[in-house]
Amino acid sequence: MAIQPQTPGIHHIALRCKNFSVTKDFYQNVLGLPLALDSPDLIAFVAGQVIVAFKKAETNGNPDAVFTPFNIGLDHVALVCETEDELHRFAKGLADAGVENTGVKKDETLQKLYVAFKDPDRIQWEFYMK
Image (cartoon, rainbow, N blue to C red; front, side, top):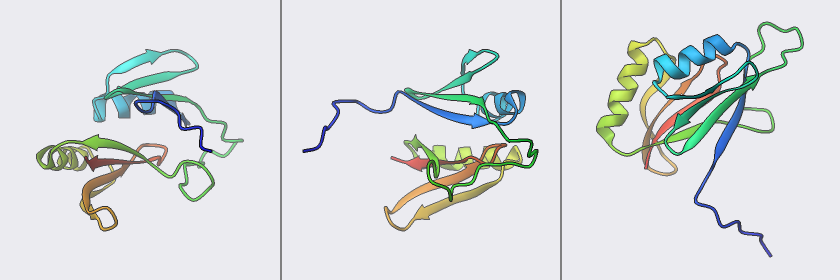
């Protein structure tokens, strides 16, 4: 029998990054997420009702190490978008800021619109219609 936790959703997501200052600039100044915590070991941002936190990655001396969605673990993170106008505004903002993204696309499986983009460590994100 399944445990079935009684929960309203995700409390936080913990990710790894190479450079706190680059990550902080991207999430705070490009995406505009409010900074919730800024310490030498952890930075965190508020995304709706979820905290997105970052710890420093261990790159094992490889300065070119980046995220890959093809290993076991995280594929991508998706934020909820409530209106198509907001989706298009956000996609334009990403493009204007020089952030690599797909533009607005339709997920053929779920028949929903989204825009996918990557952070400086190439962690994949989506802004996905509710």
